[in-house]
Image (cartoon, rainbow, N blue to C red; front, side, top):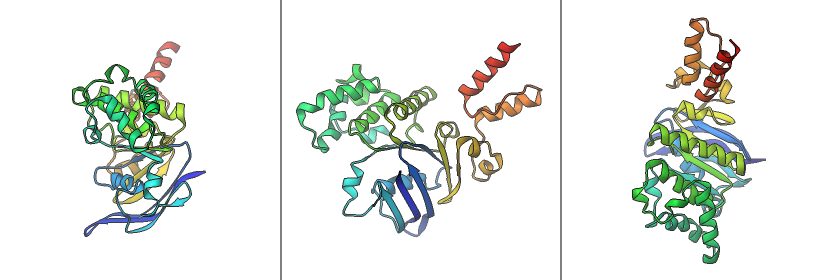
Length: 274
């Protein structure tokens, strides 16, 4: 079943046309990476999906229902979104208060909140920090709290809008591992919006957006190994593929790998076979 169907979607800011007829659909439980250079329209698309912006024309269907002014709040309640800067999502004075905020908006009875707060703080490994001020957390920890607050509201679609772009490599790694864990354990439909080619490799499907249009789509192997398409849309080959191509020049044959983890494993197997 498709949980999201977009047809011929157009949007403009004043005189600038940002989205120019985008069409795509997402099946329930899939992990889709929306990839593209800065300014391509990715984040605008996310805001349109959750009803934070109003389309110029076209159609957005969520769970089989056309998104309108009348049902935007009801449909938005079924979607969670984690933005680029977690500081913009913090409301409470402690981690506990912040996770509770979304539950209060969903009218969850107070007696039911504590078990949910504890459950999702544990899910993102933030239980020791429940009474800590968010301002004292690292960037990766802040994103974990933002994710916990969204998960506590039991979304059916979870959107990550450049949610690792402000993090250091270690923070990116831990958040990406958490996202993959959430998808595997809870079967939530995930949309990961990114300009990071390495992050895009973890999805079931990759959609490349450039200049407000869908430029390419397919499996990560199909899209991310296509050097000409990536170059045409100002994107680079995944590092693992670049390394594989470099090794090939020295006579080292390694199967195509999209992630560093896969490449490392392949190299260990080659070494062990000697």
